[in-house]
Image 1: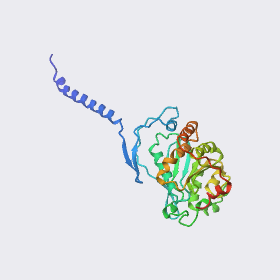
Image 2: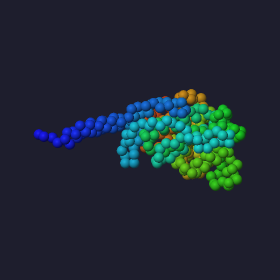
Image 3: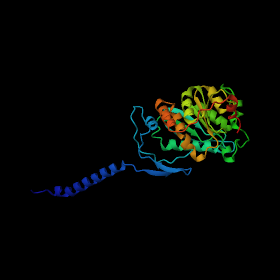
Image 4: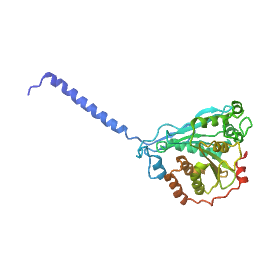
Length: 327
């Protein structure tokens, strides 16, 4: 068959074009298979980010459901963790937060108001890192973590800020509106937290701190009592209701008297080794982020069976109030 000059000219072009399209298709298919990476964050911690969520844990299964009830199956994050500075103290130390999640139950976690509380601050930092590394899995929790309310004390290794003020007795003693003059008289750290809570309206506030007693304790407002009872029994902690039993002017008292969010204070025994806090208490803190839904509470009961928990201790008013005085 006789071929025209045009046909002879186009044949090589056609083969080259087809070969190029095949290469592009193979390359796109390869790009969808994400490898595992290890990313170091700015604080020096590092670890592998999971390429796919695991759903063999009932808590993670519940947290990873989307609005239609289907499970998420997304690749891990390649973004390194970092704290965000949202304000500074009078001495110039940063007030740092880390936020994860969008929508869902809103929780504000406050690292120790005492500042020089390395065990509580370490647990708070570990929580922030976990939520960042697993934020695709923790889809049902909208959480903001404040590293500590007293970065001055953290730096100076004391419980007062740089101005010599102990912050956890300078919150309002009553839940009503404050005058502008009264608000300005309060330390900058206290004003920051009050304004942040009023603006963002968390549904639950969790304060992580240490206590001198070896048993640990939970202080819980009425709306979170079901969750508090189960977690206290799980950990073998003492349990008390808020705002009764705590001094007026503390963060716990002020937040509980507001009545617009649940309040939980987790008091970790002070003699706990800093390296053991996440292993001992991380699961319990995570279970409090999901509003005590039935599946996370079931997880708490199952884990409780596998742990050695001492009998829940009864606290009298004086011993409980003592935990909230200046350390």
